[in-house]
Length: 366
Image (cartoon, rainbow, N blue to C red; front, top):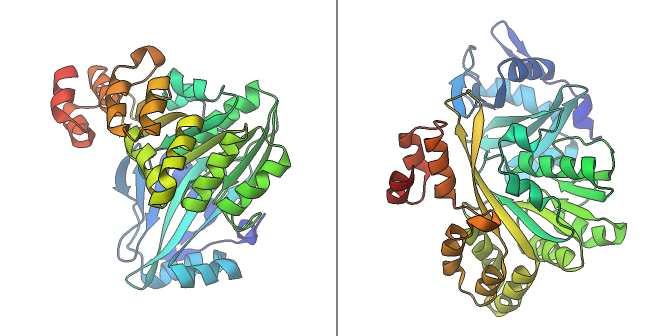
């Protein structure tokens, strides 16, 4: 593991000495998913999707500098200086991992920390539709889990990998930046490669991974043309490729993939996407009013012959209507999923209208 695992991080603020172990204690005891350190404010936590301040004095810039800078390796310090941010993770046996993003704002350091539990959550615990689990039973092709920042994409992908680990004899290779959930070999053998530690980049690792005899490849994030191109090629050659993308619905997901490429390549890319894409699950997380946890609304697109034809013919504007009509195949729009949460009492109408795409439709169906 990288040297981050061995470093102790300290922030002395008044009588409070912050350590990695204290962070684990706070996040697990408060059942928080994230904690943010910014100069001039106390640490802020997110519990079930809602932000709340931690009962501590405001942090000075020097406190954050002293806390996080010693954690960085030489190469990470160079990256922080060059780009203004760096990602890494810290683990504790039996407790899980912390994914840290250290970045500069107004010339000062700040940090965002995500708690990754030791146990990989199940589909049922994540309250995901059954159709999402069925994507994990596919033998080949491209499956995308999309959504905004903090929408649970990585957790859903981890649940898919662990489900396959429990039910299929596969060789699974994950490409992550940084590694989040730690998997144990069960029926499957799982290799986890961390970008910047075990490989140079997502795209270079993807080009090499097809020579490592995987059945399933997980790509933590499809960030650029080279990574998307390599993922499509891997899916074309008979692998099941799982990946995440920062998009808010299925139609935008398809368009984003195609639009990354130069115009002259886009017709061929549309053919590749139409042939390889098996499905898209685009999720948004809400605070569940019934039990105080998080509940997802998930738009689900399944690549039917009609949807493949629409992608191939550059008619993706038709796909949304096909999703609306595709209930028999397990499809649903994001607005339909949100309306269902309102009907079940999980979220209020005000919350639903703030995050839906068509308020009139949600008002009529919720």
